[in-house]
Image 1 (cartoon, one colour):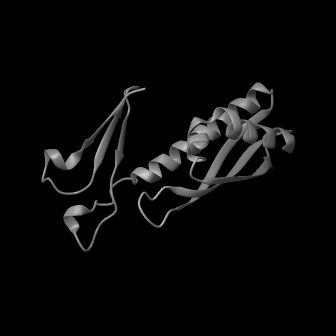
Image 2 (tube, one colour):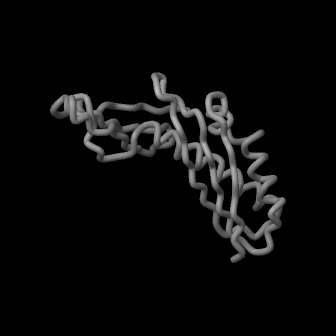
Length: 149
């Protein structure tokens, strides 16, 4: 896996904290820092997600991917899956995630709750590299709603 992250201020005014990531798969991701009223030159312009928000979103994408794939492989009629992530960070540097709650909403026809519970558990225990890695610093909890389509 390959990725190059470049500071956007390096090509312009040399201010701001925007970054562009170019992934090995040929995609671009923009990130920015929060504005800093005390030192504007050190802050971002709030034009894109923060890097830690991007990390959290990546973990959500990783685990949702697993859940859908596991349910489909089990021949379940899954029609939708979303996950809402809420995280807390440490107060001091490094401000790692200390707790993450993931609430899944799975939509489908005739999917047993036990299948959804199993898919989430399998993702978090075996398949999702992102949540397994984040679990080294954060307590990760999960819950889900099952919506009949």
